[in-house]
Image (cartoon, rainbow, N blue to C red; front, side):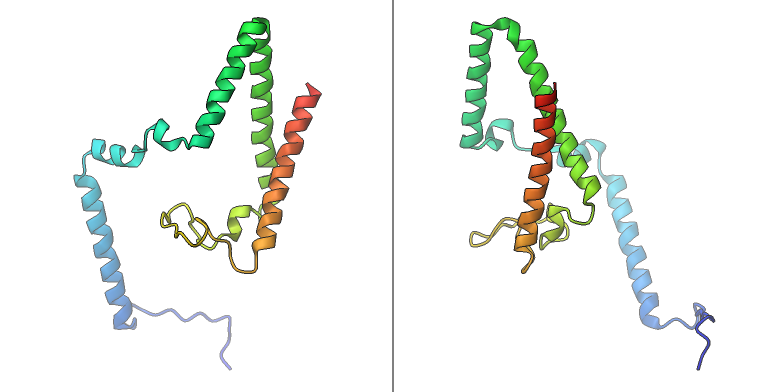
Length: 169
């Protein structure tokens, strides 16, 4: 029986031909990518990386209605009691900070049970091919209840932080 502590290393002459050809192909691909990246103008790279749809086209009608309603309510507060605008802005910023803090508390407390870890695609942000008959980001089969529980847990942690901040100050 061979000793498991001994490691066998192959010299380049002993490597199979397939590994050498794979290595050569990979080096060729890497060199081609480096050449393409070096030839491209910096303006082209930044334009493609930051190209987004305009804000109005990204707002759905439901979000647009909420935005209009929020603006109307702020205008109403400004007309009825202008002295309360700084207080309202302060409370709104506290609640937003608390929501952000709640999100990070959930990530720190449950690093291995993040809701996005139950999605089918490993890199679900890169796949932009939603099918009409299924969800945009389908959940792994058999993990639907765990996914729902992880989403509810995160929402409750964020809610608790937001309520604590809103009621505490």
